[in-house]
Length: 270
Image 1 (cartoon, rainbow, N blue to C red):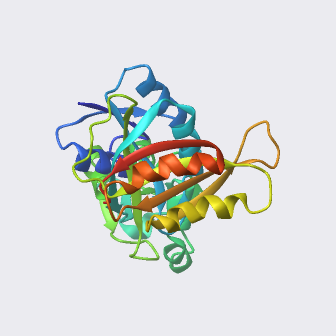
Image 2: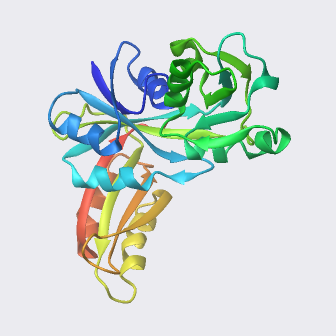
């Protein structure tokens, strides 16, 4: 199975892909849009994308891309995010003067940088990519912040482990396939969907009352602007099912209050 991911091998998306399909072959892509184009063009069987971090919040671009492409969510996976300071083999911590990583990873390691003012933080395009880059540079004063898998993949040395500020750091990932090829989940108990409401008083409340009336548990809701239509929004919602028919009933009832409804996926909660 060929799975497209955004970023380099050794990234947290790499870890999530192997959780979903342990024997998968990865197809790394530079940009998130490339991941979806690769999947749409049938160069990959599936894609694994981060959708939400417990500290940094939603990856809003990926919600937009889910709606823009004919894809569906097959399953979700949680990855514990452990950041490690990785340098050249034989390098000591005292020699490090600059650490590269993705901006979100750097922001999650503020305490480390406060405790090591001699090390400057520099933004890169990817966590694993920062380790790949430092190994190519061969500079013993440069480090990367990434997963232990990245250190193993590129031959780097872990100088410090678990340098993230908060240990309750998890990222939720979706395994996505082309619509029509999504494998039904056994006993799905969670749904992701997108909807828009009419621009009139109470329309959003009426839509949300559908979930309450069905006894479902709305676990999150996110709004995103509609491109080219100022002050209009798409709402993305996740809800948990307490009975199997609730998802079908929601799809029947929501169009009474919404101008657009699209189910993005029906799956087992991670």
